[in-house]
Length: 150
Image (cartoon, rainbow, N blue to C red; front, side, top):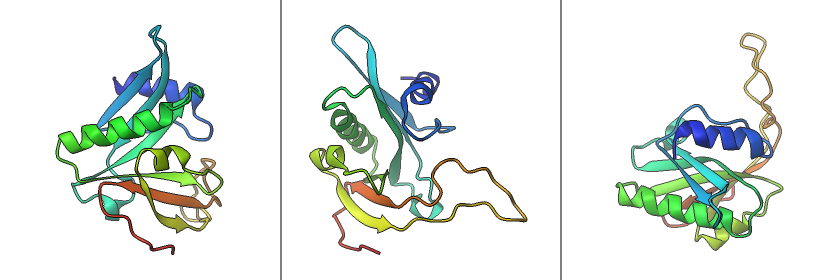
């Protein structure tokens, strides 16, 4: 699906994030009647040190709470990424989220990240996007799971 379509769905239905600016590809899931019920936007890793040319990141996933839709999209995104030569896919969940859809899709938690204060400073003020001071978990598919819980 187009980035424009995926961004519109995320803007309307994601619980705590705005749509990302770009993507490598986006995929959607339709109900039997054709209604779009979930989307995933996949792009380069946001963290520069993870952008090695072999890794992609699910930057947004939004759903209308259709059972199994998140797991189906995580699995489909990883299959598509592998098919075009990527070796690893990552995503993040907030500390309060269980990651059940990721576990069901065969993904593994890599690292539990503590809350960070955000990117704003006196010399470079930035608005809070709703993700400051929130613990996160980094998940991955493809590479062997690690046990680093820093």
